Image (tube, rainbow, N blue to C red):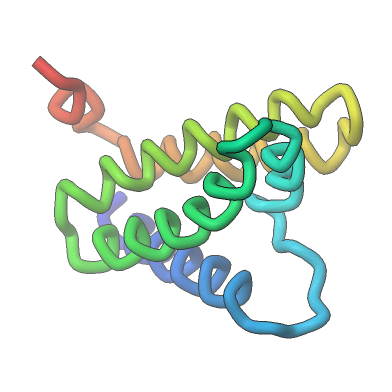
Length: 120
């Protein structure tokens, strides 16, 4: 599963980098339902700016093999997963695709050592 962590890491770097470029592209699948974050008053725009940066840092950590990369990916997947769950009511297909991709990536990233990442 280590080589697949590298693939997930490079994918995270590419998705996050494409979010920062001013291209007229639609959002890529793990971030498609993240627009629901804008509905949170005050903290919504902050989370919208933080999510791609968090994903980029997590991708670098996964490629380098650092524990911090897995923890950052876990934090990003919590934010992305909650926004996808909230978006199930408004755009169910997009949110279901996001949840599937996030779940599969979490399975690859946390394979075998998820207990070690828990605090305590």
